Length: 243
Length: 119
Image (tube, rainbow over all chains, first blue to last red; front, side):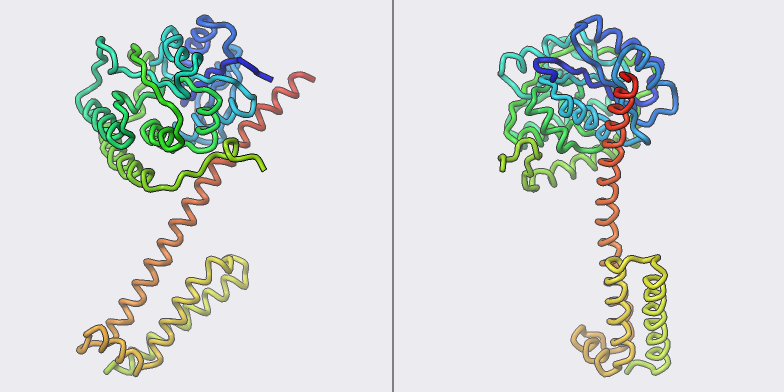
């Protein structure tokens, strides 16, 4: 029913200040895009603000964390049979003007999933030192594990085709999900491509990740990566052979 | 040899555990599937507490010559660890199922809101 249409998935947690701007920007970039905002148990007006801008709004009854929220968006995209999906964060970091770069490899059939990398290009974005170490660690580790050079495995700025949507709707990790998801993509033999993009500074609010948390996440996600490597691949229902 | 007082006290404690578990099941406050491990714990501890010769023999195998009741502690600890691990898996499964329910609920509500708005 949505053949050839693109859905923009925007997970948002207490982003009432930024969400209207993001929805408007996506619409301004391409009015043919449908937008679904996944409100991850916000306590502010995120849901109503997003709805007032004409986005579809899926409201989670409580906070699931970024992984659960993003997966809800993929399930929405799968149920409504969207051909393509893009994912942008609800804090305004991801600039819709960069979307053509993300969509091109998916549209011309070179990739199933395209990730916007902050480091693949020359105009490098400079995150704080501690975070840069974490980002580099995961990029190197994942590159090693999947035998494909990647520069930014923590980026949530992505474009996906039906295969990518089906994979993530069926199975998506919980916190700091992008790193593990990269491995999942590899294990399911989908084609992943990185393209350089510019990202903006956050417009509103604080990043949800504090220093102590990032240390915890580095350990947790590293453990999860090795466990995921050892795990048997269970194909999501949509990919399974028809009976 | 195990002091008699310890055997009696440990037997009573094991029986109490079994009794409490039974009462919880009877009152439907504990599902049988989660009670099985506790019943096994209670039974094993009861046998080891009451059967003094057996406890001494096992202590001998383990090289514990001075104080056989130490085996009771070891066995009790082992069972508690097993029960805890089992509960961690139950908890993880519940958390996953909870996530799926929340997602399905939110997607259904969005769909329902859309249908109602169309009417």
